[in-house]
Image (cartoon, rainbow, N blue to C red; front, side):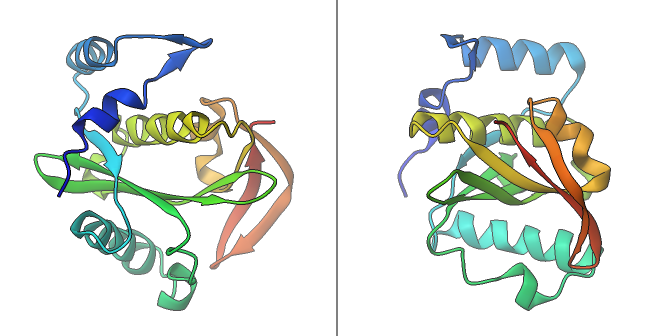
Length: 177
């Protein structure tokens, strides 16, 4: 299996278009805030990382939230880019990116229950945004569970339209454009 560590650094975070030292900023920020340091990376379909990410999706969406298997595994995984977050060799975060003509769509975003609120999701989502931008895609949308809207607002996303039920939970569409 290829080493994805260089990808982590290539998918450089940017602030106002200016590259910054990822290693120093993340390590110092994590140490200063006592936040867990996780490593976001790509998880190609069929890889062990992808399968472990799917297990986490099952745990979070199916077991915790009651989503059906048919709704969770909707047949769109093969054409998507998948990312996972590793902590001590374990997959603790997962998401997928669908590449649509009008925008990239982020979804199936989950973090292990015990690590929510510890920075794992922020690190993974920021790496996702950086990866999307590295492919010269600026327009991004997602469908947020209503109680998570504030998380995405931190990254500049704005809700639009009304609330709607998806898999029995209230959602609202969000976009960064």
